[in-house]
Length: 428
Image 1: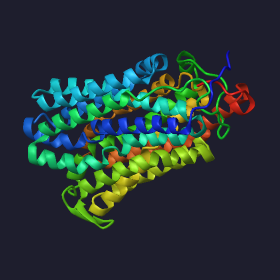
Image 2 (image 1 turned 120 degrees about the horizontal axis):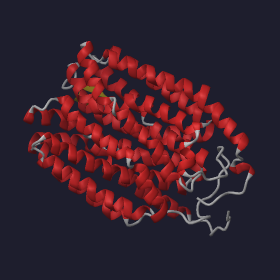
Image 3 (image 1 turned 135 degrees about the vertical axis):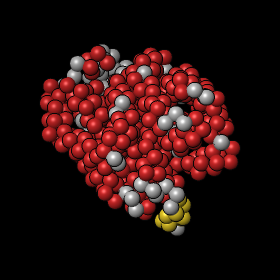
Image 4 (image 1 turned 30 degrees about the vertical axis):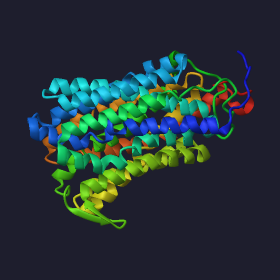
């Protein structure tokens, strides 16, 4: 194993790589977080039913997540530039097809193409941040993921306005083209660090050995994190995809809410605040985890999410509480996209970080399979209460697993495999 290194990269280079990744994430955020705005208009035009339309959301999540390991494999071998460039092209193609879709199968094809493109951009951006910032891995992954979580916040009102004035099809077309072009241009600036350009860190325990993806799949720590990711991810994805239908069923969607000096319809306010908080939580909890440990942070965040989901089911029919509590739900959910990839790279090393984090990210796709079931459970139970209770319990279980299962497993892992505080730093 070689320890040959080049000189450390200027701080400005690391910052540029981080910022490019963040902006690319912003450009793909609407593919997921703006989707809920299109569900009702599509249903009003074609009457396919919300459950059938939401299958497209599930297809998007599946292709966005389950192909990330393949895209990560390409990135780890050929660099991030070409993968992100192709992703930007696919993102644009996806929304152009959405603008033309007049049959369900066409909508599903567009969702698959968009998922592949978004996954290429997402997985590459996160992996690049993990490699460039081993000294602040939680914060860097959180800031990058924040671009995806909060990226749609500024466009919620423009998208709503354009849907109302020009129709949802024109909105798909022009936003899709614009987002894709920006990603393609920025992809040309991306590159991975050379050995020694990224500084080592002893702030949190990190394995001094790099694990291959095959070794990761054989590790029990990986599967514990996978189960936890699914448990927490399912509730947040349900809220992301169903927030507009939930607001409509709670009869609060169009009721004006005054908060922070602004007055907006409850759904519009909730969507805007949710996106901001869903973005802020990622660097915030990533920074917290860099200082108090990954599992301790998971316990706090997942427990808060359980409380928030339960409270939304009980108090969400009040417009103001709907806005506040949906914000809490998104704040306590979005951190999984910084905590899990940083924990994964801490345990398994940075050399194959994009692929290994991508393998773990497929848990989001697995969780998305439960999103259509939320509609079924809501219909069977006569409301959303049962859905919220199940989601709250899943988060509570994940919170307990963080301390009772994951933390002891990681401690045992580092007793066998030395961490970077007791070994020479490895090249990313």
